[in-house]
Length: 155
Image (tube, rainbow, N blue to C red; front, side):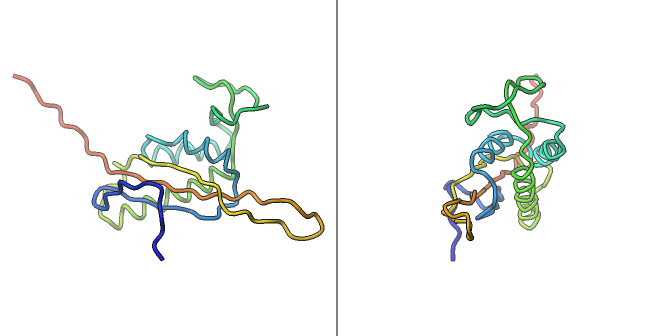
């Protein structure tokens, strides 16, 4: 079965991608984590998410910020330390790095160009407490190898 991605302009020569389906994490917090890492280098994103996991760096909540406390930090008004989404996204980033290595791409030059979270299927808890839906979402990340631009000396 062919895996479908929401990113359609995929170039297999310069890009690497990975996804995690049915991750047991909240869609809203994962959306904020994805916005936080989009546009960064893969190594930098892994380092930042490890700081979030250890509650040293908050992730700014820009959209889903109702009843969210203020945090100290430059450029952050409200934020949280989402531990579970950070761990799941770090695992997907490691898969992106491994896929890039298999393709022969440079792991240090990978930039995240697409990071998305979609709602998963409706899964329900079983047992006596009926009517409780599980939090499930799909995570996908696409990274592209960026080449350093050579500065031309103008004569």
